[in-house]
Length: 434
Image (cartoon, rainbow, N blue to C red):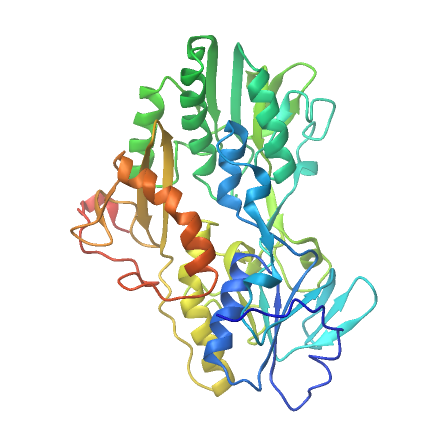
């Protein structure tokens, strides 16, 4: 395998200077941007320019952030250079996007430069918006209010948990959508395991506070995960819409005036799209996510703009597995668009994820737009157990990191696993479909 040179290409040289070539510009060098670039490099002619733009060269393996607070992995182990994940023939550009001029097919950068595109792929993910919740950046931030959704936050929380010996820990999701919606649940399960291993679980109260009406968005999975929370002695507060996080008083205050006290709060802030989306006329919605066709992944903004991953305004989880499954359809549709062919409308919202439950076990769920997580096995009648705790699923969770760097990011097709959700091996019930 050959890698890109890592050379920071001058804007206007590799893109604007080749007007006789097709120019594919990918904003974002994370999971979606990297998958898209690597797949397109194999799919499109060498004469097609493919450029990936990001503001920094640190590619973070975000699923690993969950393990940092519990001392199970070092934060530095999760970072690799973005440019080293790109195949030969792909340019990497370090630049901060200022705005996208949709009408002019041009991207403007914060240093005053700009570049045109024939195809634009938006893969800039979701960002944390703690400033949207009163008190979340107040006096308690870093003292008794933390998050594990960033490298610095996960490190700080690791130190806080190491000092914590007695009291009430609240895990709070401010609002949906968020990246990896099962991660807060996983934090609850791992916290239970962490304090039991230290022999002080009886002195630590754990409460999960969610805006949802249950542990998860899908009824069958919500019921099963709710049972696991109850079995581990983790309290659940549902339909709680956080208005204020009061670090001084140690309490969450909902918009309905309900209060949840805490000694330590682990908060997942509101998420939104990248800031430049808000500065780009007609590009995003009120949360800066891009309106996107749910089946083709073509944006609803302009026909030559495609969207992948967390940046997309779709009714599907914002998770790495989703991005992987989207990549197959999206890159084929870019090829078809450039060739003047009809787009492939077969993406079905396929998503799956391992849910770490502690003590060397995990649960696996697999679902799509129309079918919620079901019991059975994945990817077929013989495979990993679904909606059931098992050590095999835990091993699958751990192995996913290797899969991420060596198969998912390079854009490889995995035999037996496609973008379409498999139905073989699943036990269907009338309530689980539709």
